[in-house]
Amino acid sequence: MAQIRKVDASARDRLKHRTKGYQEREPYRKALESLSGNAVIEVEPDSGETLRKIKLNLSRAAKELNRSISYGETEQKTVLAWLADSEASPRRRRTRRSKTSS
Image (cartoon, rainbow, N blue to C red):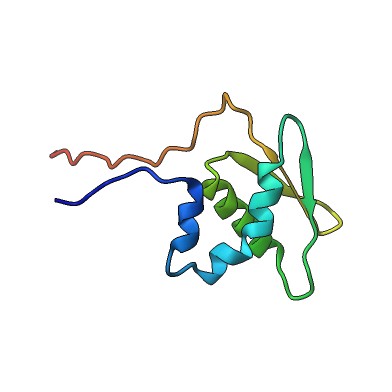
């Protein structure tokens, strides 16, 4: 039988393989961790980086932190991100319609 034991968070450093995307999202995770209350962060794209990529990285980083965020584009081509209202329910997928015979 397998042996199971609890370890601290530093055990993740022993993982064999971290994806490139996970490593690239580190600054996003740090910025989102520091968000609290009504704080807002602004992300300005580097050269060659699109707003779509920034929004995707923000969404994935928030998912990895188990945080709910909202974001939007500005007229100056930056992205603003903030914590979503806690009372808002998460989006639900549509359920399949049941087949009915006519």
